[in-house]
Length: 289
Image (cartoon, rainbow, N blue to C red; front, side):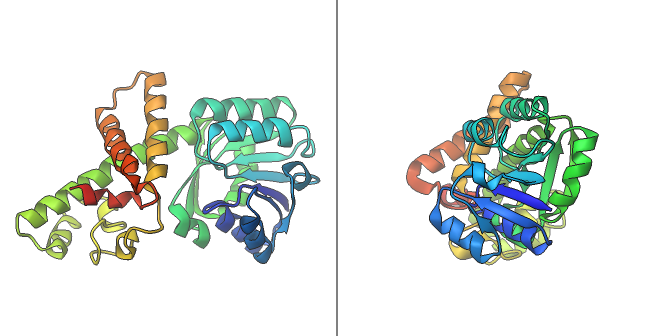
């Protein structure tokens, strides 16, 4: 299949490379020359504009920073330039309203479209083990699933357009809350004289167990390899967690949902990022405790 990939950053670069490994012909675009060079080294054909990249493709995959950019790229450079009937898969994490409006505009112009945000981070993007949460019709999901499966371990149909983004913001709000709670528990355990490894051994098989503890422990040298073992470099940047928490708060306000723990998590990450920690992995918030 011929696929355009728009946005080759930390996540998109690995995802595009996995599409090539799966046998697809990938036509890649990014504003950064360095990202284009990496994509070319990974077997992608590179282009200097989005409009060139989407020529003659069967599908367009995008991984972009925010909803405004997604809206602009699809409105100006993808819709009307990609072949009629092509499938659009936006894997960016953006607000639900923009995901729906972009998808609806694409469908009105004769395309198929899904929103398909991801969970898993940079390592999973490179390894092809992402989880995709997909919003769109049954027919669009059926077309999207084999493309997404080449980049992930799980592809789940969440519902209609925008449902993928709804699932993503709820999931990441929960992740932010869990990580802060995990950090608090480890910090308190140490201050009470518990060895971190001993606390991990107990809590990881007890009722306090969660992913932030057993798969992504914020304490160096405890549990599986994680960014904490690399001075909190790599992984999922705190600035990105803050972005997702802000999206969650916007969605909660729109839906009239009360999220006091989510709101507090957003406030804590706002303070952490404001203190010049935005580039550190989100588990580094343990430093504040």
